[in-house]
Length: 458
Image (tube, rainbow, N blue to C red; front, side, top):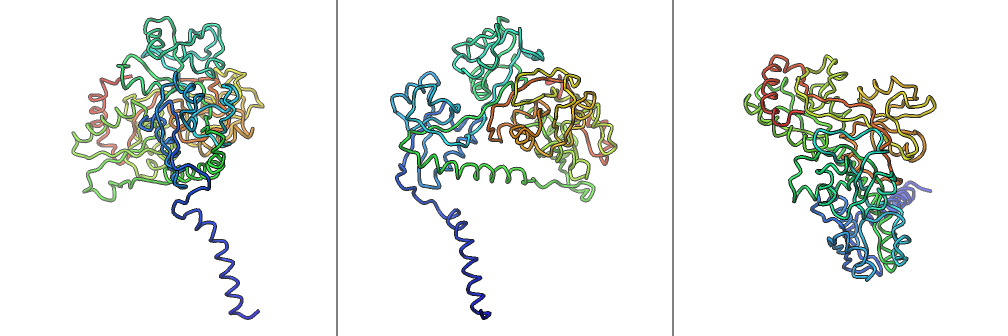
């Protein structure tokens, strides 16, 4: 073969490899037999702060084949009957066995979950969730069969409405409420809940899109497209870094940059952002917060690209010479033990067995220190998602993380199996810290934080 012919063959081969990518990235095309409009009954809407993102991703997925997916909010009590009457083309978020348990065999679902729902423990402010819920008076949403089965205690009771559920907690008829996280955030928009405190995730399970069986082609398309879309968005989110300014290199700049690993949806994180802006405004600085994983946040503080970190553990992190401790407690969190097997309760590191494989996130120094007191085999894991993957594939038995970080991280992963909270090891208190270049200003910054944080004092 001469050189010219070789180049021709090579170019044809390259085009053949490129063609699938071009087709995938091409403008929206119509899927054969697919409807132009799809009406889906949902127990939440796209403006919900917890579930808005996956519902928006669902709509975007089907736009690729020119299907206008309309998410219609339908109250939980009415949604099942509306599906039976075939008033909708499907339902947005049902558990895996929904069609068979409800007798609606005309519904089909994909293999890929739409998202995971979290059931959280809520107590009266200042109270903690017991290590073991056995024997504790627990109330839950009566329409949520999964959580009732999970609790399965003689003192647990289902309530017909959120109003009755939280009224029982207020009157001390029950001690703990276990409620769907998204429902609680919806409830607090309408009712003053200053006397309540969200504690930790109790149970998390994947939920699925269900469509009428005549839309089977859309189910197959969803299985191909949706995981790709979610992975792409998570990668973009993880790799995105808001530019952080190094004050040591540019002394004229008047912006203080903090990193934070506490999810911004957490109410105290919002208060901390507001207070920090006030603190540094008094000192003549602008203030900017950047949210990322704990390992990355601490790394940015250590290398000097950040001026401060929102949540250092006083017991371990603040011993490091690359940060200056600010003695104002901001967050408290339990060290939470997660598993895909709920047959054991873990109340301390000593409860682990020597054959237990326990994963924790790199950079979580206090967790590592606490776990080292027990006999378990410890594995350092790079990301929370990797830890969940290792749980699902039986490469570890338990995953341990700060409870205040679990909820936010679970919103961004697609669980394939239910996940259980099987223990809370101990409480940890977190404080702000500064890069050493601000050591001289630290006493004044600490004084300002104490002044402005007083209304939110732990």
